[in-house]
Length: 496
Ligand SMILES: [Zn+2]
Image (cartoon, rainbow, N blue to C red; front, side, top):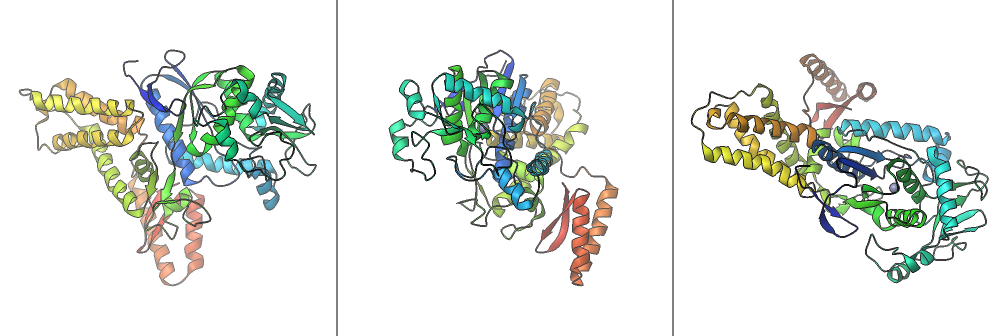
């Protein structure tokens, strides 16, 4: 690879040069969603961040196998093996089959990801599709002496593991500290140690999803699936393992322990974690009423939102921060992002028809300045995917593009090579690397029709005919159009 890429590795707590195990190839595993409810906007940020990473690796010419799982069983409500299985619980409440829940929310998740213009992973394995592999893994860990069976459940023996290995390797903490900070939990009497976690859980007869195993009917512990599926599709060792920072202390720590116990190796060379999304400085949570779903954000359908924002504006907004920083959501911040995005998108539109004037005398200074900005696009992404700096570089490049397009400067002042490089770099980074696209790629007929429908709906609302107004809104939603309501009424719409 021509470019030297540096990534921040949670495992070593420093930025390191990225060197894949097999030259030219990258294996990347990212923990996917648990499909029991609508995907949260904070989770969207995580997947959009890894989409940026995936896209840049592809842009650099790597052949990437990107595995992102779907958790459709085994994820309990509590982090410490307590509570009900999230999918089963939802199925019981809705009186549906667990697989109906899984199907619905998997389809919804894919739709949302597509709306944000994220590329699909190379493989998207499911936990229920890999029960055999998970049982084999449990047997292996038992054989190696790092797990024990109690009454049909199998637990990982953390303290025994830590005698010869380092359980706290990922978060850099000592086992004693972790033990001191762990509550003793009720209903955990079967476990030998406070930090032990379930590999296989005995199912009560009424549990909806259960499978036969050497230890009786049961289901896998949540952490197990990622070890089993990354082993299967990426081998015992691969390059990048990613996920949200909230997964690091428990899920990823346990995943490493499982892999080291069965295969003797930490599965990934680089562990990458995305940070959280906050709302006006506060953690987003359902109980605080300050979290919203992607479609609410697009439609402006939430008390905290002034108006709706297009998926590309949201994607752009996320890119304005490094994936490792917290992003604070506010109407002001996203409105600023909207203006900035539209400005850069406008310059991207001009590229297709931008022709260079006949060469005059080359202005060396300008020629160098433009080449330096093109280098900045790469340098910023090579510095741990620093997308805010990449946006700054694109902004600088857009000034040149705009002045050449408007002929306020003569594009003959730079070499043909530089002119083509400027166009290609802008195009590559705006569309391929940052994964942005034009918002308004609709034809004029659709716009006219939508404006007419919006007008009729606004009239219905004025006449307090809310039944018709709701019918129009729902009808449009069913065929993929989302209206953006604001305090001034509805003026805008997006495709969903
Ligand atoms: Zn995982």
